[in-house]
Length: 186
Image 1: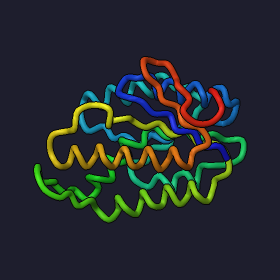
Image 2 (image 1 turned 45 degrees about the vertical axis):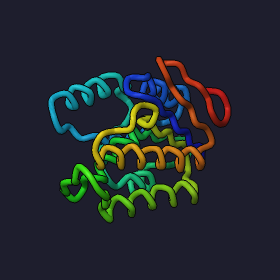
Image 3 (image 1 turned 45 degrees about the horizontal axis):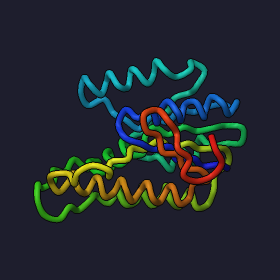
Image 4 (image 1 turned 90 degrees about the vertical axis):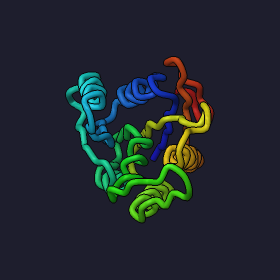
């Protein structure tokens, strides 16, 4: 198994780079989409991603149970591309419909902790086949306003660190240019 983390800012080219890695693998590709179309703008983003993907790639949509989907989909001679970890994280943060306070402590839902732990445990144990994770780097700007926004930035940073520590390769993408931080060049 090979695990690659491709991360960068919004519109950095990280998804396109991950898709190029998948295409170059010459393996069967399963695209795991974690987003949900909550509004028109997000629907347009999803449509753009769908149009860009090759027709022969299989798509699995899963907003929450990422470890389960990886167990089901990972196989030798297959590459699973997960786009993206930060949308998945956001889905988990709001999975029980709670409304967070603007100030004070943020208590995340039990499912958030369980699903995050299940993903990292799965990566520790290894999977057959290759996985490419796409994630956003949200911690390079100003400290977000509001408790839930700060919590999201903190949790995204922690998740990126945890996945990068378990990954064979970590690639930071800025302005469409990949910078390999860990592992073999792309």
